[in-house]
Image (cartoon, one colour):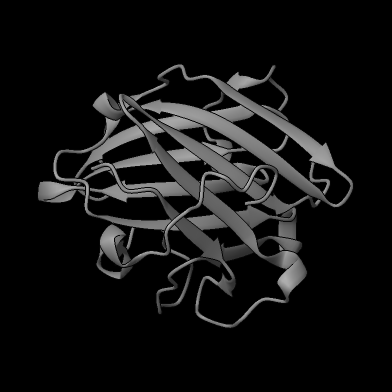
Length: 184
């Protein structure tokens, strides 16, 4: 897959529109043997993980933006990025069935006022075979103030980011213009 695309996280997990200043954006730019993933998201000043920046287990318990890429036979890649330089990469086969985790990747992040930006490089070897659909999410807040947002929301009683049936075809997503330096 060589197409570049963009996901805009602009809804609550269950489909209510978010104010523009709470939108998170994920751009995926194909670069031969790797993908460049850029995140631009609101900064909520949540406590960072207690570990140094780098691969961080259970990062979803902190302020994070997630990108998921779905391939054939329910194989998918979950990438999580935080504003303080923490990340998590998981390969799954079947809903919530992790087959590989803790992979190292180049990732940097910086906080700029009330927003943060991150950039990662992902080997195309990590992509699930037949990668064809995607979704993105943003999680922030602590305790009762925890908020969940999605590019493509799902119904249900609680947030569930592993609802593969609501992922959208990558071919239908807006193209990411790699000439837009500094923008999502």
